[in-house]
Length: 423
Ligand code: HAM
Image (cartoon, rainbow, N blue to C red; front, side, top):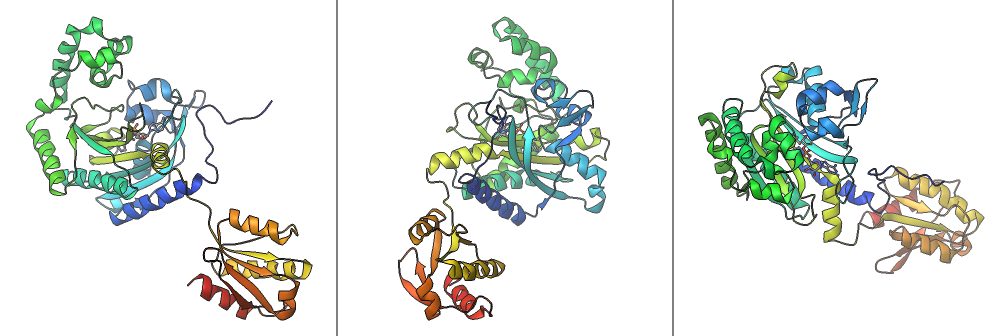
């Protein structure tokens, strides 16, 4: 029996991993420019943390969590709850009134796997804790948009406000009476949700349900004055920075902790899995987790979806690259090459060589496959002359490089190679 990865779990192998690294590097640079520091949390947490933050009546908590029932611990289905737990546990709120934190890592949800939807997936998650201003909401969305733009992706931003505990109950009541008038036409899930979580009826994927709720009341018309002002200020700020967005009254999000601003970065190029990233404000959550009354807002981008979009855009996934391949032919040359390669690596170059005593043709093939910028050829002739041949693999130009005895100082060889390769 062949052993395979679990359904919905995926290896990221060489050839693909370079794209992941490139996306992460761009993200880290962008996050740093906006003043974010990295934080890393464990993937296992107490089940209670997610039940209390994401909400008991959500799909995630009801049916998608990987929980060790006997131990009451759960593989994190998202990063926000764990990050807040760490923030409180280490007193980060005492150290600085406003914390800007990001984390990158795997999350686990037992969903039906399909393109862009996995059971182990990766998020790049950012959170700002301790800031109430609508300008923070603006800045976060602008940062997300800037990062997606830098990755060369064209994605649209959808915006909503979910109000607060002051204004949402009245809207919920209003929505419920609208839903009850057409309850028989809704799917079984929505019938159930109308009791537990009626706002979720608004974003049901079922076509019949979508049609039924087209004329549903909009929460944007039911905001209290504080939430309405905040929502207006967010929109003004987005316009000021030239960040394009559209309002979406149906966006309610699948996690219960949101208040006021919610947003999603949407693509039309991934079929059903349209959200490449999403987030919003969660004032009140930190308090519910036992902390002080500190407001919070954040979002997470789904790595797999970003990678799929980038692969669709550019079929040529980033090729291998190494600075130098040293082709040593014969025992003495291979022996010299062995120590030379080690020293060059210590000097910061990425260098490969063949360790199996293969011939020149085969070694040149290996150099090509590795994407080597240069190849240094050392055969018996070169050894006796004390001059190796360095070939530029792009221009095919060749030049001589001084060689020294492997037991002696190789500085002249190293200096010559570094000067040419580092340009
Ligand atoms: P979320 O909408 O559940 O929000 O997930 C955020 C992003 O993670 C999605 O837009 C999607 O790109 C990716 N994602 C989610 N589930 C999967 C999956 N099964 N397979 C592949 N990608 C997936 C959150 O998780 C919130 N914690 C975001 C947040 C941060 N809100 C405030 N701060």
